Image 1 (cartoon, rainbow, N blue to C red):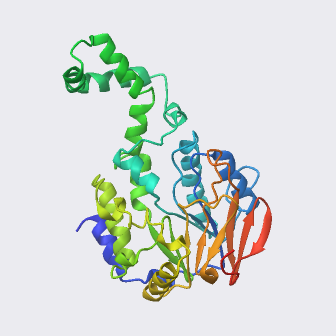
Image 2: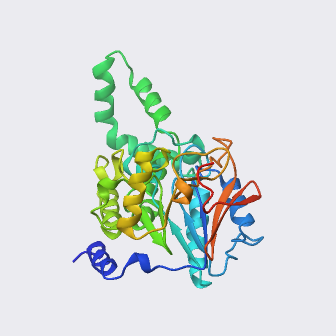
Image 3: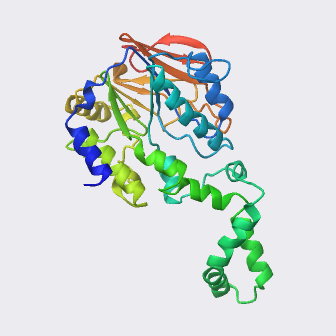
Length: 331
């Protein structure tokens, strides 16, 4: 029995719905902006002036999409991974969810990787590392280019390769591989978490998965990422929990679907990221869905926000301004 299969069997024996927490803080998509990330953690009272965990027994849910669009992904992930261990020692917990951009980085879809993300991996050995990588792929790479333009010289072929593979690229790909520091950590995280009646997910929950337990969904996502199954429905389809936007459509049909999902999983509400609400955290259907991605990164120029669930009270904090959400309905 593999470690992952054993973990699934163990998880199925314990209802994830039994997870309880007195104080939950949720933050949305960070997209490579370390300053915004630290700002919301500090404002929420989760880190001290040395950026160490100060949140006590708080549960911090990060809704996914740490990477891409900004240059500080490595810096954020390294801090988040350290903070995860610190929180555990202090009686708290960090629940980092898998977003579509985590999946994209693992499976090699690098369309949104900021150049600074590669630069963060550059060392004095990076040129030699890239040279060795080129030596392994040179014949195939050259054949591909020459099939389209037979006039290219070896120097031109290498120049094109270097342009597409800047220094730090190889190290970045190694770190995000299934066996790398980030790839392995992400694949071991959950895509969906039910905590004290709140269902947290990056994109959203489609009723297409309603017959699948949360544990089975998390297992399938981890397996797809570990196996680099880039086209697997569970991580790539429009209805995947990593990509689905249907929970925030604001239609009667969407609300009816949300009602069925809440009933199926015994939840009171769904909290999602993925679909930016640049003016601040927004609730739908009388608080049944809360959209917590507010484009906090510099790329989007949105709002630095965090969501607080504390003893039944639900509060949105947008650029330092607090407002109660529960039951307010559609803004």
